[in-house]
Image (cartoon, rainbow, N blue to C red; front, top):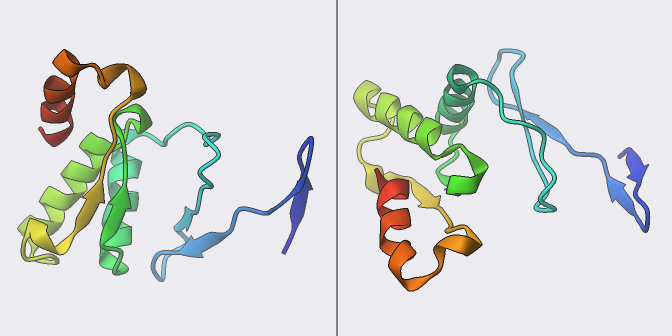
Length: 115
């Protein structure tokens, strides 16, 4: 596995996994908070659809990631196509941004994420 050097350590290269027989692949990002910009909406929805079709049923997202809406679109399309029968088949984790943890901001932030 290739490695790249950070200021203080060596980290493994970020692996890519093919999602289907096409040339598309999903890059696994680390949780270091340093991910590249998201692809355009239509591409991101397609990536989520490919992941669902490949059997992925767990998704980790957050309002600050900017991918909640696209994941919702992909879920809607896959429910409509019948690939997944119900929302209960998929596990989705989302998170509040730190400034939304104040008492009067939690409920509106949660409602926005769930919309």
